[in-house]
Image (cartoon, rainbow, N blue to C red; front, side, top):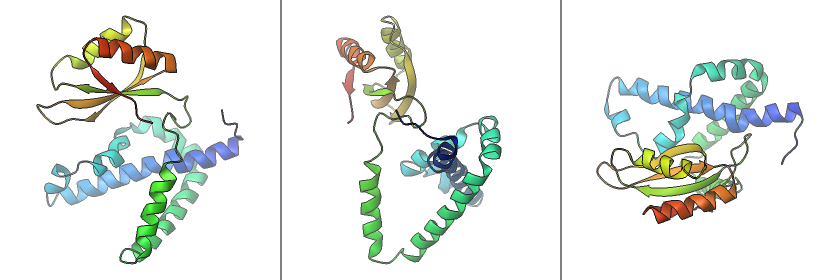
Length: 194
């Protein structure tokens, strides 16, 4: 548990929640604008682009009040980020760029894997699933029959006609352990990532 003052909360939320939302919306709209002249932009937008813009589909009704009430912190954070992006632009062909990539990879390891940010942590399992109708319902039925509630679900990887991977977030470590046993017993391959 982390205890924060409301001022600290708003400053941190601006950087790790609100600005990423603005970045996702901006990146998505920028690519869509370029896509008007060349439809290849969105057709080829996969992997990192999908990951980075996933939250761009969040409805504005959720964000309207947040953007108004935390305007100062978001605005200040965006100014700082623009300066950081300018530095990156200036270093694009410089040897220091490798160091910045290495630092980012190292710093990213500091984010707890079971953290939901400002929400309570969830306990994730990754399930390998066939690309077939009803597979999500089948998994949900197996778990709900044992009173295991799925808090969040995401299709992580999918290749049409092949197996894909789903991430299931559960409320407790015990739920995760029981879900793994149940799913394995029913023929599903599961993994936990630490």
